[in-house]
Image 1 (tube, rainbow, N blue to C red):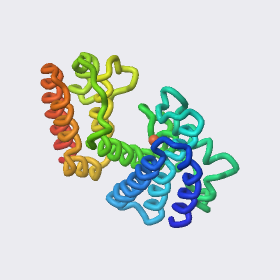
Image 2: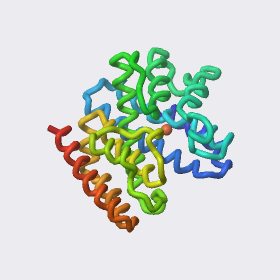
Image 3: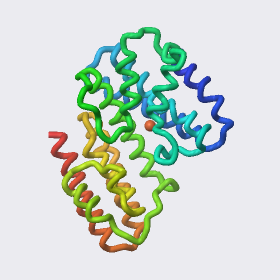
Image 4: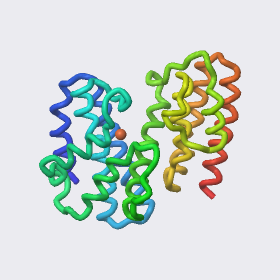
Length: 249
Ligand SMILES: [Fe+2]
């Protein structure tokens, strides 16, 4: 793993001078790598498979750096899908070989990078691919939720509560697509809806222990003066915590 980590640090070092918060993306990567390792270990995967999960964690956001350099944004909507860009970078001149000598996991690694951020997964992923895709999806979501609990990076809300569509989707335990977002407040629903796309027991336990959703909901309740929004959040947190409890049974 050391060789892969050194390669990643070398690769990203060139982008540190590009401004932006490249350093935060690097730190995010290492936290996600660790979470991938923890989730994979919790599933009793082989040592080799845990290694693959860690490699996927290390590479999942490799497209973020070129995205910032080219477009000076981390918004995929305003630039390019950073996961697709990551796959392109890893394929170019077989760059993936610098991270792992064995070719036999290439498909799994590339598909995991590609699908780590997609709202819907294609139906043709096989069980092994799905296993790893779901590990990175859980790990990435957990760290994004952690970031949402930190003060200073909270979303700006507008005067509206959640739109009816988004509110009802959450009450019905559905994850939220960007297409459903109609106001600034709605953007918060995406992270709250992450829980309905969590796959592994380890992740549910982790989220329960860390109380990320309670922290986020409390934070936004204090931030907004809109009573209706406050009531919506009270209902949503009940649904989320209930969903976590049921998933842990
Ligand atoms: Fe990502």
